[in-house]
Length: 334
Image 1: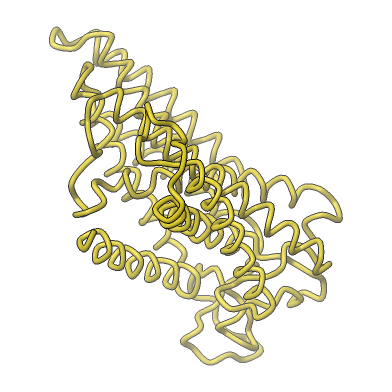
Image 2 (image 1 turned 90 degrees about the vertical axis):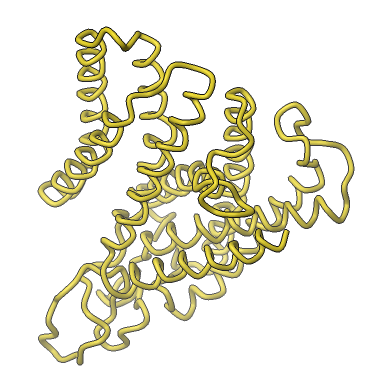
């Protein structure tokens, strides 16, 4: 438990640093963070699957992640959207390449192809929405908070936060109409609500105990812990809603109407919490099926990277879909 707490604190410091740099300085820092999770997470999943089944062809997975990100970025810059489609096109191309490599090698079998494609889908494919959070609308044209602002302030970076008059806060009314900063909201809500769900589930389960949630998949999880996790996600969402009035960390309301904004925040927090618990159970099911205790040992007390972010992955998917949906409905998201 001591190692878990110490390294949990260090993880919190690292993630806080990533968020600060991404929101206030250059948002490519967030991209680099997600790419790191993709590379390491897919490697850990490859080892887990290879423990029981044919080993995935990891170099193909690594090439897929690299080309997928480049295609996502290029298409987004050119068109402003379509990055996700480009990423999955690269996935299809690399799946074909995997078949070709398999047919050309006497040492590989069809099972290697299947294992490789599974790793492309999970965790990499799902982590695509984690990356996509950084490309949601809201921040307008970003500027450097460390430089003086004038009428013609220089545009020097791609930070998420933006307000020429107050460089550390996002002004939702900068353009004269209410413009939610969906990007900052989605990123912060995913990480904080998922983490809040994990923490509340852990301590509620330890305190109340009671019937097991899924004893065949994760023997330590309880129903009381799962319920506590749902409240944890909503409490963190309520906290973010409170900060949305300040504009700090780029936060804004999700709607110009305060009551509607609060409801949307709470629903988002609840959905992320549900997704976090499902993601954790899914990852546990895969580990148990593959016969491994943890996906890795990179983080003492926590296991591997995938052990730490398994809930974030589905949480990011839900956040991305939720924000995309409300931003597309007139009058709901703005």
